[in-house]
Length: 418
Image (cartoon, rainbow, N blue to C red):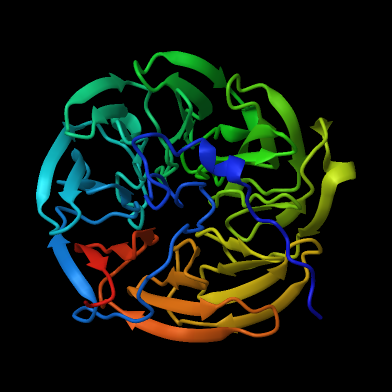
């Protein structure tokens, strides 16, 4: 049965990133200009391969799970080499893929991580004047878009057996970071011009007692303008939190998440969807309220050991679409949590977050195969299956008709052949 169209974003939700130096069709941050996986323009290829609809591909100095970000003619990607002892931010020229500059940071101290989570898994973020990158224990760095270092912050040592990957975001004059997980874990905001502290929040549930404790948040926060105010939404162990992004103070929180969270929250005017990792619960929450809104605003919760979620889903109209880690696509009703359909897309796992571009869903598996789906609440409609043939855990980035795919070996620029 068809349901009414739901508004999944508002114009105000875009304003926090679009400045005089950014265009609406840039991809300046993890999951795009609004942090929700939605692309704002059209003209993207439906099909490609390692040779078809490839404008260029360039080798990378090491494997990685971070996603490229794009601003005008610059493409930025974080990457680690030499077993993580060299942590880099690389800037490529958009038209030809030539390297414009590379800034390396050496870090020789021991820092644990999972073999499937190489160092520098946090994506950069840019406001068109500066680009910010978090290198874990090596620190938070700001450069201008021409590669000159502006400032550096030592945020402490981060120790968890699965490493880290939460990406920084820019909101006004602030850089906000979910710093952790592990023995040292907290939320922080620093001045984007100087790197000086603005606020910090410590939540006891974020912190592990041992580096191998299965607890922590790898979730990148999201800014959403809902109910006439900006909210900083972040999935932490046990709760979804809505904070004032300027001060870090509490607005509301909702209980229901597990001890592990990987995905970013998915905001809309009607519901915010938050999902745990490691087979933990998923839930939908009605925006609004103050304090603990669990009993008043939680719309639904799935607690029956749902499949592992690593990549985030995307909201289209009144449905949530996600490719779970085992390679099974789900369509979930946004307001009720009803599972409308499931279909296996791949025998390979997936860590990719889904994106919505040009009226289609794009999501890839670990073998470098991207599945293009038609959003449909009644059935899974696969429009294309595109193989690059290289290991891939990063998500795709979209800008001005070009798709940027980061594998463990290369950075690809894909577009419709002219």
